[in-house]
Length: 130
Image (cartoon, rainbow, N blue to C red; front, side, top):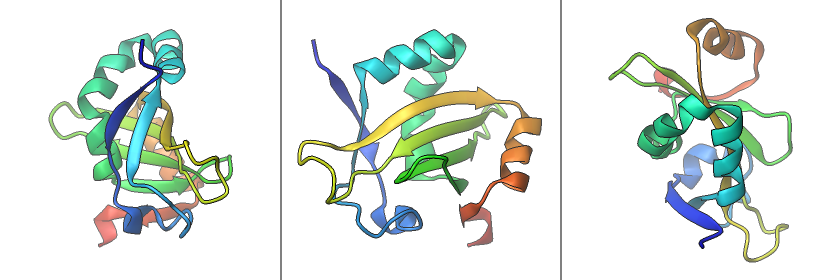
């Protein structure tokens, strides 16, 4: 059984708002984090399978997360009006060599919560202002 799965590549220049020390563009999710999503947000795992990569590749917002070297990524999906939140841990030169950028969690959120994160969070990247 595989311990992790490849999700996508990230654009290091976009995520440099978190740190300039990103050492890989590969993003993975571990089996443990898949299980976390399935346990905590069971209805959201199918959304992750469908929209996880695009959330990382084309974020609407990147906000400062509550852990170092991590980002809260917010994405609004036009297709179904869903609002998505993904927490991503970035791999830097201070991490063990076999680490990768890694999805910590993912969930669909309502519009009220989405807007609250934008209003109260520290916005580091806003695709709508580019």
